[in-house]
Image (cartoon, rainbow, N blue to C red; front, side, top):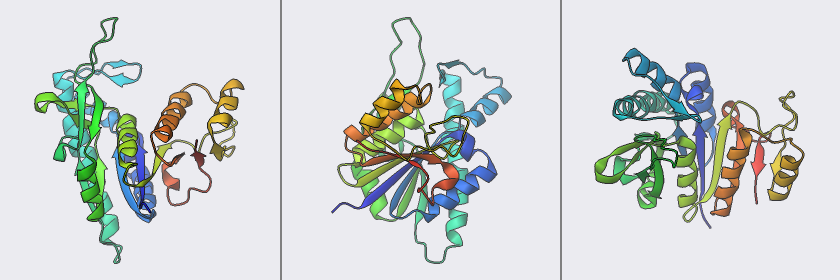
Length: 267
């Protein structure tokens, strides 16, 4: 029987604010079993770039990463944001006399954890720069860390060819890690966003759809209940399920300790 592994992906907006980070980590420490946290940090990167006189360019919500911006996101994601999460998580665990868990901040370059290739320019000539698309996950390294009591905190940077660091979408990293680790663990992938779950009524924050399978998803799309930015999130969720992940949960970051009101996605 496989051990349970929960992979939590959280956006930069949550981990960059002290109050929301505290809520997230409170729930994260209360979860059972082995855990991995994957985080963003885009707003801090934008502010840091601006303070250094580096202009931010976005295409379809993706950050164009030239050599100057790569230095910024490396400092911010792998340094400032990642180590702040690790420090705050350590402080919480220090107050738990029974905890022997060890938070460890990582990028995809550490232990060759996540390898990627540089995204090629699009047919229209659009070039995202030093942006990576994931090729492989070092499951042996992650397995060793998890079984040793480590809580990996992964920043959205991966290892490209010839030692090149690449800026990589945190949702993609979370999904890639989840599917890779499904061969070893019983994996649940949790995406945290601003609502308790997927809503049947956008104007009612309590109208959570508690279970979505492929048939229900088709109905929700046909009826227009699910649309816009939620579609790629759900498409990615079903892709992870088809690749071996047991279930995907969509919820709010402060509700990690109690997932009873979340949306659970299964095949």
